[in-house]
Amino acid sequence: MILHVRSYFTYLGLETDFKKSKYVILPVPYDGTASYRSGAREGPFEIINASRNLETYDSEFGDVSNLIYTLPELQPNLNSVEEMMLRIEETALDQLTQGKYLITLGGEHSITYGVLRAFRKCYPKLSVLHIDAHADLREDYEGSRLNHACVMKRSHARELYPDTVSVGVRSVCEEEAKCISSEKLDVYPMSEDIESRFDEIVSKLGKNVYLTFDIDALDPSIMPATGTPEPGGLLWYQALRLLRKVFEKKNVVGFDLMELCPIPGMHAPNFTAAKLLYKMIGYHSKFSKK
Image (cartoon, rainbow, N blue to C red):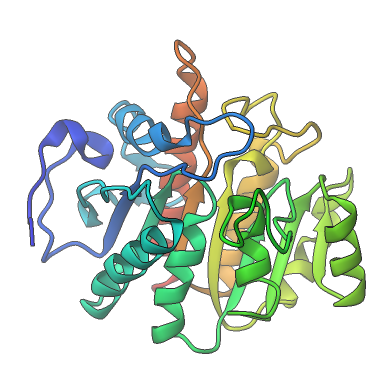
């Protein structure tokens, strides 16, 4: 076990001690099933790089930087999606069995499936909150059942965690629309009044929740750097109000942030993702003390 990594590749640029840390960030630079614009493999590095310019004090929760440890990047396996999912599962499970609060940084959304397989061994009963522009409910895509476009079919559609709620969806294919209707899935499409449904959304979740956040849930006006952007997404304060409510009302046992696809020369999206990550960590730290 490596207990220290170089400061230029740690979240917030700080050296922390693994044994004393509460939150462990696992960067997974993988986009092996990308179907439109590849590059999400660079997302974890650019988020961590941008985070070095964040203020560690936040008016909502103070300074939680001393609680965070950054693991080395998980080496991707580009030859086999199945083997990559197994590698992710084993690495995630190792952290969970050591009692760490695991935060996974992608990379493409297929990564979440490997992470959830590890969480299932520790939390057999768990709700999943899926915040995303896309339903990701295809049975298979481009010849793979483990494609990023299928991650919620594997995880959300009753194969791992049936109690899943999807929020912010504004792009579905006909197959996915039929799946949502026939299986009566809790999918909340993006709308102008989505905030009026936040309480209902949270009420659909059980006590323990895993949160997966695809960065394309945010509107392209504030988050253009993603492989498959969709207009009409969550704005910054909308997203924060939803996240704060979830962390306040539920026991969020782990989360991930996926699909940042950096645009060369455009730094704002990387900084936005880094800030969003810190907000989620801070919300957990603030409300888990209750």
